Amino acid sequence: MSLTETYWGYVIRPEACWRTRAPTVERVCAIAGVALLVVAFGHWLFPHGDAAVDVSPQRVASTLGLGVAGLMLLWFAGRGLTRELHVDLTLRSLRQVARNRSGRMRIDRVVPFDAIESAFIRRSGIPGRPAQLFLRLRDGGRVMHVASGRLATLEVLNERMSQDLRPVHVQMKGWKRIGRRLVPEAKPVPEPGSTLVSI
Image (cartoon, rainbow, N blue to C red; front, top):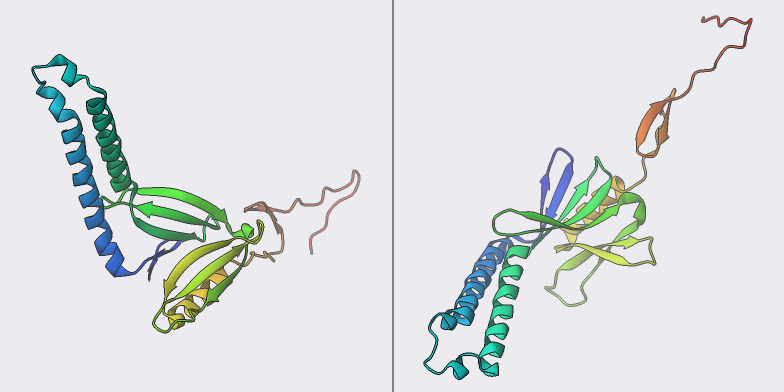
C-alpha cells in the first residue's frame, strides 16, 4: 500500500504492482467487449440469401448473448479496478473510491467518522501472507477493509488513523460547536436600567 498526502487529508492506495496491472486488465476487457459487439451485430449487415435463416431464433439468441457479454465487459472496463480510500479530515469522513485507467473516479461509499467505532489489525497466521487493517463500524459491528501490507507499516497507519478518527473536542472560550461548525456563543443581554462595565 501507499499513502499520499493531500490538502484535505490523505489517500490510501493498494500495492503498486496491482495499480500497474489494473489498467492493462481494463484495456483487455474493453477490447474484448468491442470485439463481441462487432461479432454480435456485424453478421446482420451481411444477410444470407434465405430470409428464414436471417431471423432464426438461434441467430437472434446468439446476437443477444454476445451483445450482452460485450456490454458487460465494457461496463466492467469503465467501472475501474483500482480501489482507494480517501481519509477526508476536513469533512471528517472516509470515501471508498474506484478509479479507472483514465483517472475517472467513482465514489462507492461514504462513512462519517462518528460511524466508526475502532481500528484493528488482523495478523495472518500463514508466514508470508500480508496483515490486514480493518475498521469496526458502529452499525451492527460490521467491519470495513482499509489496507493490506506489512505488519510494521499497518501499525503506523493504524496509530495515525486512530488519532485522526477520534472526535474533536473544542475547548475555546467564547465558541461552541453546532454540528460541524464553530459559532460564537451568545453574549449576555443587559437588563433594562443596568449597564455593563468592562474592567
